Length: 205
Image (cartoon, rainbow, N blue to C red):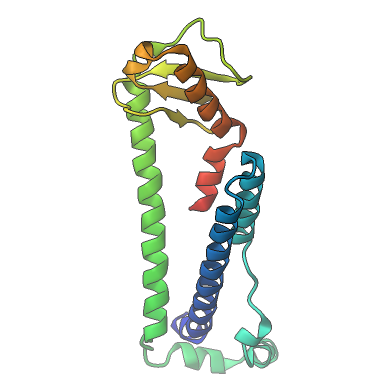
């Protein structure tokens, strides 16, 4: 296990660094493009951002040059299953190299950050839902949307939650807004729902 980790970790780290540089340059180009087309319709800008996100989500594949001599190792392992394997397993313990330590640390930190984000977001949503005041009745939504709208003392700005059962939480000052402001804010939040931004935010992790 340690031997395999030591063998593969330098190539994986090299691959990750190359992808990090490529994705950074790609995002810079996308941001420049969005700045150029800032006067374009929102649907066009959203399409550009969505395509960029899909490109970043799709995993790259390791080219075979990242694994030199691995075919020979695999063939020798298949055709020479013998006590040599036992001897290698019973040999002195191998130490983990620097590349393996970096790879393990990167993996653990990334996993910890993702878990922390999901856990903290879940607690925040639970807190909002628990402290919601009441559902806003007789609401004429300016855009068709299967969602419920509540007021909550916890939020200071409109918040949309849920992946399947969509809920919009408004601050308690909602009742003091004029109708034009209410329609504008509702259209904005419903646009997030119709674009499935909650799923996109999850994929961005």
